[in-house]
Image (cartoon, each protein chain N blue to C red):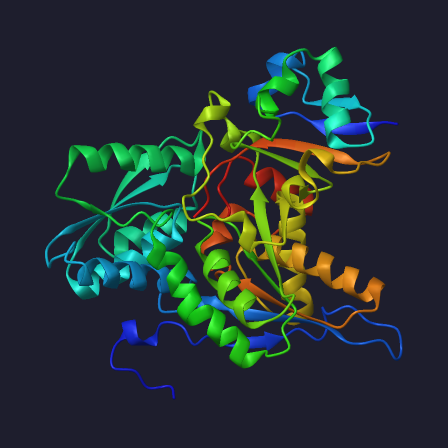
Amino acid sequence: MAIEVRIPTILRSHTGGAKVVEGSGDTLNDLLTDLDARHPGLRGRLVTAEGGLHRFVNVYVNDEDVRFLGALDTKLNDGDTVTILPAVAGG
Amino acid sequence: MARYESLLDACGGTPLVGLPRLSPTVPEGAPPVRLWAKLEDRNPTGSVKDRAALFMVRAAEEAGRLRPGDTILEPTSGNTGIALAMVAKLRGYRLVCVMPENVSAERVQLLRMYGAEIIFSPAAGGSNQAVANAKQLAAEHPDWVMLYQYGNEANARAHYETTGPELLRDLPTITHFVAGLGTTGTLMGTGRYLREKVEAVEIIAAEPRYGELVYGLRNIDEGYVPELYDPSVLTRRFSVGTRDAVLRTRQLVEVEGLFVGLSTGAVLHAALAVAHEAVKAGRRADVAFLVADAGWKYLSTGAYGGTLSDAEEALEGQLWA
């Protein structure tokens, strides 16, 4: 099952500079574990030691914030797009 | 009533207009799904930020933090600065704005015209950098008063006391409220009010997704979440890219004759998503969304002419919301 994952500039040191990588998993948690096998250290930048999403990281599945969909337990489907972005201010 | 003692008194009370052409068609016999636009461009300086600026200045005056002749300092990507510049002019304050250098030219011109002083922060890092620079300036100038829209409860309270009640008065059947997420003040204040009054109302955030430059932080810990933000007020949060925002902005002019700023295009994109879900589920929906400002200040960005791809390219690296 292929899920497209968009990586922000700040995390591309883990993906050899790649902007987009592919991964698989039934949930976001599974996907991040799968990605970490090929891109070591990536998961640790996104998930805290307590097992939650890092406060200054936003993850979107098909443009929707996963914190309102089940966070790391968010279900994923083939063809989904996952976007990772650092939290920035607006206003 | 349409007569006011001064421009400051003419803040708020904006129209809520139906969008019958843009609202999705429902199958015969199914409950209606309707879109409504709250026209915040009809405020004194043309944006929703007039509400927050007025409330923040009044709160500071009442607390004795601001006295005539004082200097107000504020990090802003534009609209808050313009609103504060007007309030500052009428109430007798000097205004210093810290603004990312990649905002539209019109915003800079408007601020200068109002007499505000602008200190630019680097484009990389966007508003995060403006906030950081303003905090440093505040430390260097202890006599300056930073209202700090990102953490000022009067920002959210402006919407709790005005925007929320106006919406409920004009649309008692409201089921969804959609607005842009910047300082989060609009969504926090309006959202809290509506949640208290309307059972099962959905509060939906639409957040602009810019080009990469804006997310060019040195590390994740430089990220920023406004102090006002309380995720429990929201039910959903969408990230909307430049192309979708431009597409919807143009659609509003073409279909409904409504000329809006680009952040409203992003908001409409999220509003249409929830409206179509309601149609699919056969549920009644009155989706109100907030038009933060009109399109005038963004004409120079290239968003309103040429193909969608031209516009997307022209907006790369700009803070369009």
